[in-house]
Length: 229
Image 1: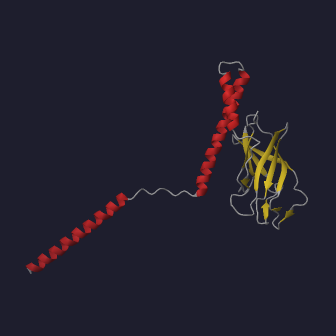
Image 2: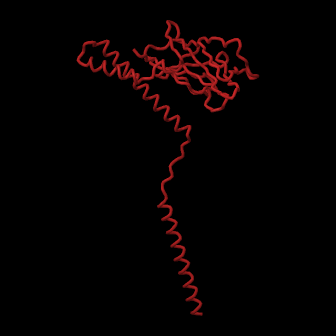
Image 3: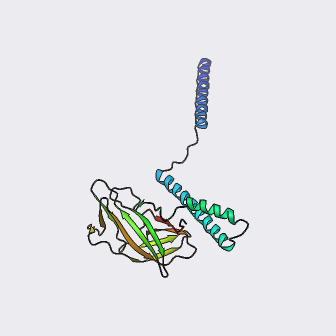
């Protein structure tokens, strides 16, 4: 009987040692693992990068406005020579109306999604007039589909976040075809230029963007009001 108790005790002791060793190894494995970073999708990274880029553009444009105001108020001031040098450099760096960028009208990168940009901005007494280019960048001979601005109204948002409603839009050319759902069809390689009027901008606005007012799924077409000398 005593022999069986010794055997039973030995088995229990070995089981305890094995269990403790396994638990220790597991803890060591967990502790040695590198912390898992939260996954970021390419789209979220791109959006964050775009936001940072546009924040930098606003900073450049804001500095230009401040330097221009200083020179108007103190053309012969003690800092005027330096301000003129800085203004020349910043104007060369800032995005201007002569350098519009093409972006996709829809966030989904599908072949039938056209591109758009703001080609020109004109401030009038009772409105601001934008010349918008829309391009079908397909090279396979297919069509691009565009929501008509007359049916899907646009809205303008300035650099301070103020919204301006669309007042009037130039009709699409008579040779533009339409799909069954009412979307305009642009043939591959075609570029349309449309004039769209919005409510007048505030005098403090130095840039902005256009987007669809409802069900906005487009990359905003952004613009700057800072001009090169």
